[in-house]
Length: 283
Image 1 (spheres, rainbow, N blue to C red):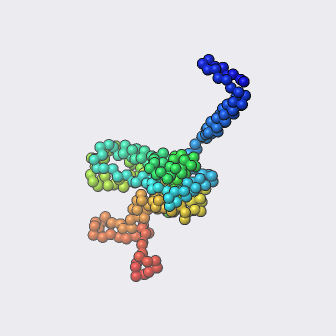
Image 2 (cartoon, one colour; image 1 turned 135 degrees about the vertical axis):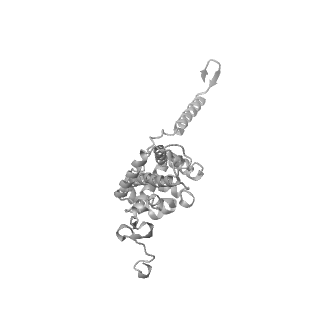
Image 3 (tube, helix red, strand yellow; image 1 turned 60 degrees about the vertical axis):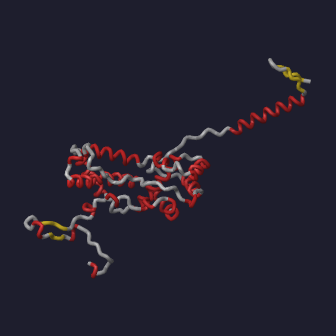
């Protein structure tokens, strides 16, 4: 008989009992070690202008296909709307422009997008299974959405000429220290029209950053992605903020000597639209 002695107990144990006790403690130790999860690796969050790795695309696809209807929960447009400053704003036009610039950058924060999906239990469960953070998944979604928008954007709307004209409009506003609330309605209208240039430049710069790899990926899986991503992703984002007077031209000119009595038309300064192509009766 073997005696186990401790300060407060004197317990006689047989060799068989000792073997059982050692085996029990060993199993308990191994089980405890086996239950410990491996330390998580570093979380890599890509930018929208970075290529989406093949393994990330595969994980994105698995997650979405596990969701009800194989569709992402709704999320808002990734581009902020053009400025719509209230008439009562009592700060300068230049400061309003700086404020708007901050709002534009905030839209592309993956944390902001991920927070929109906090209430989707199905998505949160899928992310836990795949060991993907909401920010990672949001960044993949942004990269794919940017590539899809780049694919549908009209080359005409992405011309460098229009971008340069928008930059000229912005330079005037950046040095305008007039208080917005003190302007006449006509002046406010013109300022807001010119301020749309900020949105044009912002969207142009982002769309031109979309990697070719992501554009090809979005084209290859376009049919499926159109079911996954919301409708606003598949609309030309530049069109919403285009100044049509600049992009199309105003084909009517007023002669100083004629006043309002006569407007002359120049077909070279604007576009002509027909109700049906090649239909003389519609001209």
